[in-house]
Amino acid sequence: MTITWREILVFLILFAANLIQAITGFAGTLLGMPPTIQLIGVDEAKSVLAILDQLSCLLIVLTGFRHINWKEFGKMAVLMVIGMFLGMKIFEVFPIQQLLTLYGVMILCIALWKLFGQNFLKPDKKTFGTETAEESSEAESLLHLAGMLLVILAAGVVHGMFVSGGALLVIYASGALKEKEEFRATMAMLWVTIGCYLTGNQIQAGHFNSHVIFLCAAGVIPLFAGIWIGTKLVKKIKQETFLKLTYVLLIISGVLAIV
Picture 1 (tube, one colour):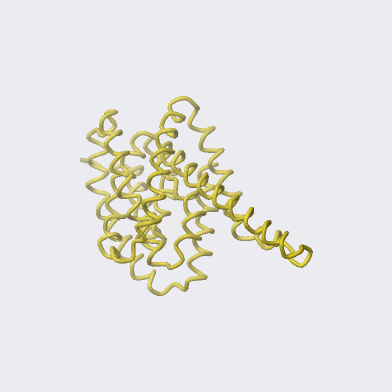
Picture 2: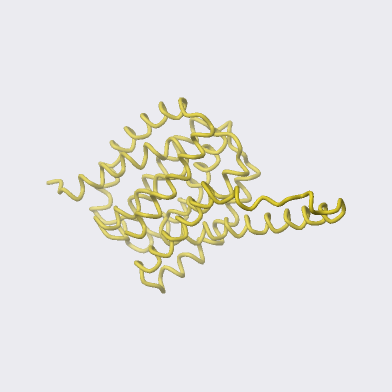
């Protein structure tokens, strides 16, 4: 079977995406989905990346199982599944390019806010009395919790549409999962779990043709290469650098989705 230039590009994308996936625990499909859609179409791209993403994340889970935060995993899994069901319904109704553009703009806004915006709106607690400050703090905590739960639900919606809800989920997870290894292992376990549901739906829909099976089989080579190199690099990255890398990856993902 002759390998086309499009397939070669897909394999290069898989290598880069899985290298990043090994470092961050979430960003592989985010970066791989937009260009892969342009190369082989949306249905095949979703099928290939879903299978290989599950395999990539499974390897992270096996090597970092003891670092999984099961409480946060359960919370995220329930809301993600609900959101995914809604996302798959939305995907059937709206044009793909409009959804991709909206998603890209949303990712860019979130990433830029995380990198630059949060320092501009720090409340001056000296202006409040003690009781007022305590009440204000409690109200802010409740609003923050509600907002974060909605973010997880929205991540599920996006994952149901494009198998790449990590851009939103990381907004919650980067605060709830403080340590680098905990973050990677918990996120990877989540993608393995919900990926089984998505893959089952794609098989049922008939998206796993001979071309998808070939790309999945051959794609294991760049996948393992990316994971191996990424696992070596992750041990050398400081926590602050790790978080900054996470948000920069969101910006790149947003641009790719829009383009």
